[in-house]
Amino acid sequence: MLGVVAGALFAALFVRLYDLQLVRHREFSLLAERNRIRIVRTPAARGLILDRRGRPLVETVPSFEAVVVPEDASDLKATAGRLEKLLGTDTVLQKIAEAQKQGRAPFNPVVVARQLSWKQVVALETHQLDLPGVSLSVAPGRHYLYGPLGAHLLGYVGQVTRGELAQLARYRSGDQIGRFGLEQSFESQLRGRAGGREIEVDAVGRRLRLLREVPSQPGLSLVLTIDLDLEQVADGALGERAGALVAIDPNNGDLLAFVSHPSFDPNVFRAGVSAATWRQLSADPGHPLEDRAIQGTYPPGSTFKLVMAIAGLEEHAITPHTPFVCTGGLWYGNREYRCWRKQGHGRITLHRALVESCDVFFYEVGQRLGIDRIAHWAHALGLGRKSGIALAPESSGIIPSRRWKMRRFNERWYPAETLSVAIGQGYVSVTPLQMAELAAEIANGGVRYRPRFVKAVEQVGGQPVRRFEPVVEAQVGASAATLEELRAAMCDVVNGPGGTGHSAQISGVTVCGKTGTAQVVKEKQGERVAENAQPLKHRDHAWFVAFAPREHPTVAVAVVVEHGGHGGSAAGPVVKAFLEKFFALYPPPGKPAPVRTAQSAAPAQDN
Image (cartoon, rainbow, N blue to C red; front, top):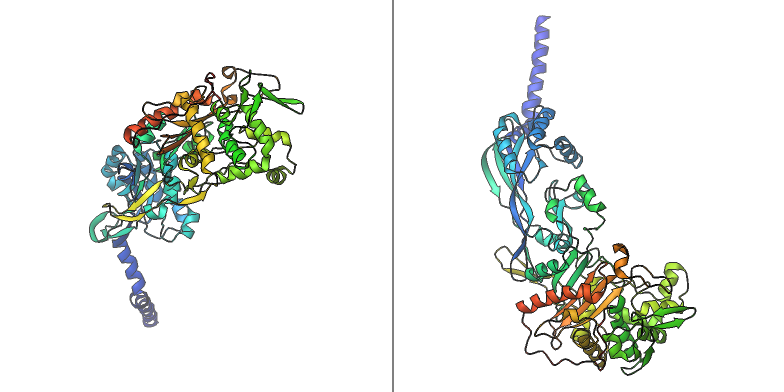
């Protein structure tokens, strides 16, 4: 009996040894090898972002990270607790759990803290023996050199989500991905290709030696059309006020400056933005995350009179010499539609109506045109539609028509509503980018370019990979005579007697522009409220659109200052500061042409 029992035990032991050493030999060998040799993925450095002169705006710098391999920690909870005390955080176990939900493979490290300070690095190194499974890693981190400057154009990066991992084969948990601006639009060019290292570790996961390495390939660099100096001047000229400035080269559609206020610092997103920081940014009444240059929509005010002039001339509703009489207002039905100048402008034709921004003149033009013909020319000039810029999301704004109102409100269009539209009020809304394009189209003879902000894609050493050529979106269809009429009037807005834009004059260059004051709160009939007597949120928006020089224009610019008041006094000095810097950097070709002045010598006013 004892022999039988002993034989059975040895037989069972033999079967078990046979199973372990022969049948499952490969499985256990791989497990043992993985416990000794690890494949560590090395993420690629994102490409640089440079201004038009090759100066870096965004770069990638080394960043220390704390990583945990849970399988190497005999008591994960205790290890996490000690690590949290050293780092001053309480999210280690939470991040490990999130990685497990995202399908983390065994022995893959989990990044539990990014952008470690030198004090934290020293603390982890000093207590390495008390932290089994914990190690330091050096990874590429995004650094925005000028903080909030240009943040809405540049964008920011964040960690890839679980949902994105299911769709993006080349990404792994903890990878960075573009979330906004050109970081998002040009993600495939900036990202690069990850590499890997084969390392030998001890029983608690500490690295012993490097066995083999496949280097990562850094992402491609982007060369922008933006000029850093111009961006800084535009940002400083806006100051602390909310608003936007967009400057374009009218000869090719290049964005020269792109500023939105208030802004935010994209560096706060590098290590993963905290819930508290995100709530603070989201709840900020100034809406710093909104890109006002392409997402902010505003009534254009008197800058819309440029559209009205083109529509009136092209539809033969008026000629340059068609007169109207402004007595300070126009009665329509039982309501008076007032001009900004209480005493009126008297007998007036198109040139002076643009220079002095007479409302009554354009009420009359609006009645002759009708809303649908106004809408046709506004759309032809690029208003009420997206520009095609490679940034998202972009607002289209609103250009109303009879069909639009029926579709939107299921109501017919009333002729009195056309009067409000004629001076850029009512349902009309536009973006600063669209208004910069409008100024560029008038300047260049009627060509609408797709806005371009990336000139080229380059390898790390500067070898070009791709160059982006200008793209013509449309010819606006206005005649050369019509556009010349507007250029002459815009010139006198800034330089002629009675012009509303004298604040944008600069020495040695003839600036052409148009002011606008966009009403935010509708005044009651027969009531005029002083601007400084209203709450800030009820004050008018200030507009200024311009191009320069008069002959052979090289820059077009649009500025909106939210609740800034009158266009000439609030937005005009911003344009002046920007153009002075622009022509200091890029002197105008030849001598500016003589200024054509208006016949009237009426005093200059803002509108």
